[in-house]
Image (cartoon, rainbow, N blue to C red; front, side, top):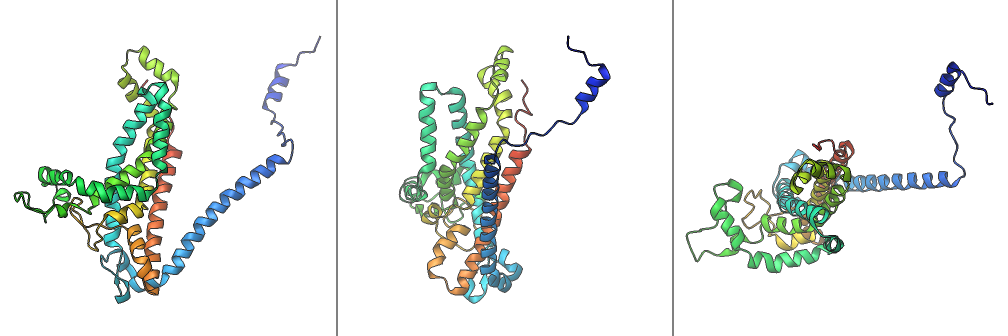
Length: 338
């Protein structure tokens, strides 16, 4: 018979440190080294982009000083330039895009993950992924040749019904005059944000859909066993478990909206004053400014555009790092009631 060990001996064996097993071969070390190299390469590329923009825009920063972030005009050759107007325009366009994209993405993600029959679920998933693959110039063509020409009644109605809200008022419009031209409702922040919202919706929807599908089946069945309706199960189980994905996907979509260029440049009528009326004609963004001014800019003007690009680069980094922090700090299901 095998001799039984005493209780003190068993406790000593249990408390002894575990022997660390070395990898069976060098392939694991090679794989780890490759992954570490890829990570450092990405960081080095981002740092190189930032340093390059800083060096090229340093002359513009030195010339403009703090006025670079407070001046609305863009006349770099005369020394009167800044990103105040285009930065506010960028934030307004991105805000309109989120207002459009978030409810569409949430509804579509919930339908695919919770309501769509299994036989059509793959079709809708592929359709959303296909929308994400459509080039931005196609969305720009759609917005500039169809939406803002055939859909002027939408901003006109919004202005008439909600004009008491300051940013929905259009001072140039005369709603009491039936002959008033509709051009005051075109090339606006509203149309640019609407098109950008259609562009970022597939990205947000994909993140949300993947997050919703991670809700445990046991939690779902438990909610139904307690008499919950399908919406009650979604509200108490799916949405809390998908909260981090909703926040992270929305902020990643915001980062995408901040840097959109071609579609915005094709729709807006650039102005270099802060335009708080999102339904009125005239808007601008940092990315559209760079695209429109690049070909005709002087050497100093190119430096000023580099400085504007650095400001957009830093803003996008802040948004994406914030999204990563939200996702990393959120725990799935922490708000579940089931």
